[in-house]
Image 1: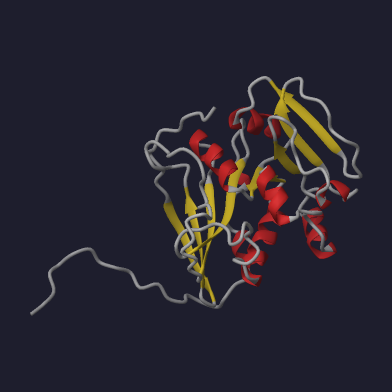
Image 2: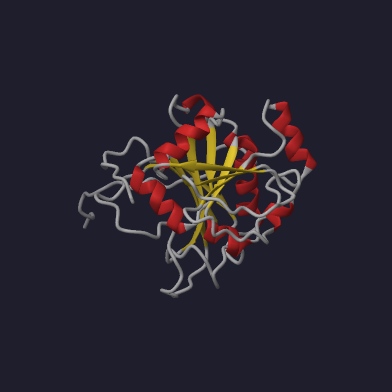
Length: 262
C-alpha cells in the first residue's frame, strides 16, 4: 500500500566543492542591504540540539573550530560588533581582530583594522577588568542613558554615548550616522531578545551543535519576554561541518509586528 500523499521533503546534499566561511559570506550582500537609518544587523549564535545557548554558563564548550571560524569571518565582514554585558563577562572578550591576516583583509576591503566593539549598558555596570578594555588597539563605543558618567580609565579608546531613549532604533541610527553599514551582534540572549522585540535583526546565523544538555537552567538564544506574535524566519542556507549544522535565516521579511521592549 502506498503511503498517503503529504508534504514533500527535500533531501539536502552536497552541491559542488566545500567552501570556506569567508568564501560563503562574501556573497551574502549585507553591505548593499544597509538602510539609510540603520545598519544591516546580523545575529550569530550557537545552540545545542535541545536549544540551549550555553553549557556551564559559557558558549565555549559548545562551539568547535568551524563555529569559531564562522564567527571570526563574520567579524571580518562587519563594520562593528555588538556584545551584551553578560556575554562580555562570561566569554572573556579581548581584541576582536587578533590575527594580522584578518586585519589585512579588512583594510584591503576599505574597513578599519579593528571593528569597534559596541556595548549597551543602562547603568554602566560593565566588567571593566575584561581584557577588551586592556586592548589599546580596540575601539569601544558604549551606549547608555543620558547623563550617566563614571567610566574608569582604560587602555582601549572608549567613547560613551548617552541617549535620552536607550532603544535599539536610536542606537542603530547613531551607528549608521557613524558609517556603520554592517553590524554583527554576538548576543547574549537578553540582548538578542531586546533587538528581536524591536524588529531590527535582519539575519540569524545559528550553529546547531550536536550536543544534548537536558539542563533547563541554561538559556536559549532569545532570553526575554515572549515575542508577540512569534518571529517567522526564512531559511537561506544549511551548511554541515562534521556533525554540526550551520543555519542562516532571514528575519526582516517576516510578517510579525515588531514592538518596543522597555
